Image 1 (cartoon, rainbow, N blue to C red):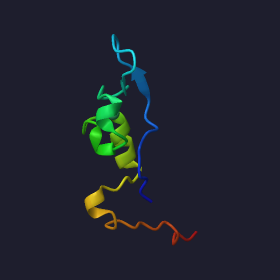
Image 2 (cartoon, rainbow, N blue to C red; image 1 turned 30 degrees about the vertical axis):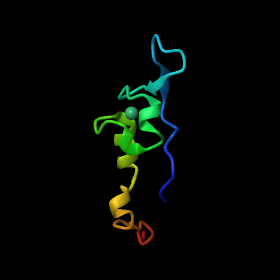
Image 3 (cartoon, rainbow, N blue to C red; image 1 turned 90 degrees about the vertical axis):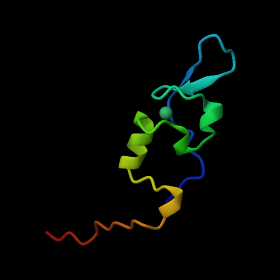
Image 4 (cartoon, protein in one colour; image 1 turned 60 degrees about the vertical axis):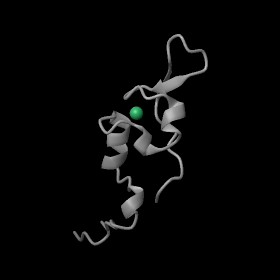
Length: 73
Ligand SMILES: [Zn+2]
């Protein structure tokens, strides 16, 4: 299921800018990311993890529907 906003990434304070925070991994500021996974760099560890975990890009949100339920012992 697609979430509307992705804001649970680790953030750190931007040095010298009192109210600015950035992603720990890709160093893009939070105001630029704006809750969007695609606001992170393609190489961002957080973005890569979400994509591994089955994050679905908006363009093909119904493309995948994996089922693991029919594994029989
Ligand atoms: Zn990032």
